[in-house]
Image (cartoon, rainbow, N blue to C red):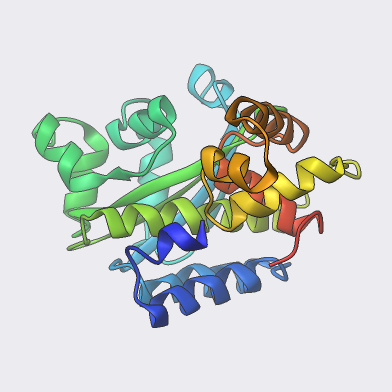
Length: 251
């Protein structure tokens, strides 16, 4: 992961990103998490941020299903209007994220839909024209943790996507810990699985890991799938974040 990030970030920015991920492992309060998210503004362009966690698809089937919200710096009144009017049911940004589980740029999507949905109109009213949405889904519990970061402008680039793909798994783990939810039993990986996860953390592809371990790519993919299954992770970055948080691998 780090090796790949070096293609898109300066050494100074990479150091700042790694420092944020280190801090996330020691984050145990809402105040600490809010500060952590706001400090990401040193790498990404945004003014307002909010984090929400709910069970999927329950939150879409029943408006009464509770949604945990950590309002980091959203405009006063926005989230009240958003949930009072059930805008999450038609929010193209949220629905696109849940469909693809990848970072979503607001402005690109809003132009595609010509701002023709209530959440986009509301965001414009609060001068949030652009931004990003990304998060993590726990396949064991169906909990989705999503971060929304908006403002008048946002940088739309592969650099932004790579930053989000790296840091949001760490922030999601921190938010779940702050909520004191999803206390997992002690996780175990075999020696070879720990080694594979270590090399994934270093940014190596399955083929590169197979060369290092002198085995087939198919064997590495097999171990990778086992790792994600054991750690209840959907993506490789999420597996790395959980592995670091659980002490299965080291920075």
